[in-house]
Image 1 (cartoon, rainbow, N blue to C red):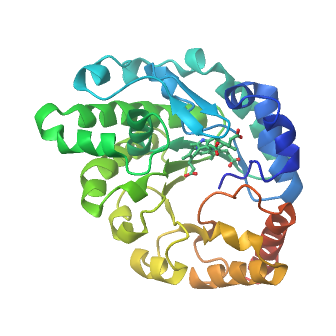
Image 2: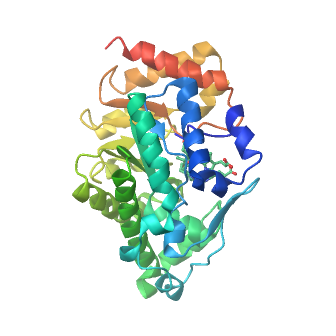
Length: 331
Ligand code: CP3
């Protein structure tokens, strides 16, 4: 998760000079940044360098990523009129509005084929993108979003917003697949803001709708669903139509496996701060995670339980990848 990033000095050479949107929307740079970590560590996949916010402008929502403060969304969406004023998601022409995506994924699919690995695309889930937009930035309590949830029975604004986002995101994921992505991960990064009931009523049906759009058009492309902070309602995620559930680091993998059952493919879930430990600790965490998911070769994609943190020693990522390859070799 978040393979690319500021823990790598090769990445910082770009991020120190070039603003985020330029970096992620200029094909040569985005391709280079997508490949840096794969070249350095040889993970089993190449992730497009992009962001979950990247497609928001297709609906008329403008954003930036500001150094030091993170994503900033300048378009205000808080009322039913605001939502009605957004673009029609059925009419988005992704080649016209996000022309760099086809170029980036086209180049990366050649690289992935040569490296005999998979090309992974991703999207944000509707609730997370709605909440980012409503709050305008990262938010501790998501109060404006919660207010819209509480008044939804009166105005239906949040339902309409989620519906528009579901359609746009489903279609955008299909576009990524049609441009070369072989797997798509759906990030519900703000699941920790939701009670199980709010998840069930708002976030889940919206994400399901996006996933259904993807699977209807591309039944053979695996979809991974990740709800960050959603470990307290894993049982609600089993029937979302995703092929794999990615699990955050706050739940023991054996518990997650017990809740999801032996048949559900899982991804995760090493605590990213383990990478600040010793080589022995990193290797132990890899083996423990694989064993708790059911042992090598048992419907498990080893991953962190959230993104690689800034300041992570680069060599620790290598220890993790190497131990994973060594240990799974025993299957
Ligand atoms: O190689 C990869 O892993 C792909 C790149 C990737 C990025 N963002 C690049 C990026 C992925 C998969 C994402 C997804 C993303 N973006 C999520 C979902 C994953 C998660 O963490 O739950 C979220 C919530 C975002 C929103 C976002 N974009 C945040 C919170 C930040 C960090 C802001 C900050 O200043 O720390 C961004 C910007 C961003 N996107 C960075 C990267 C590498 C860091 C800033 C930079 O490079 O300038």
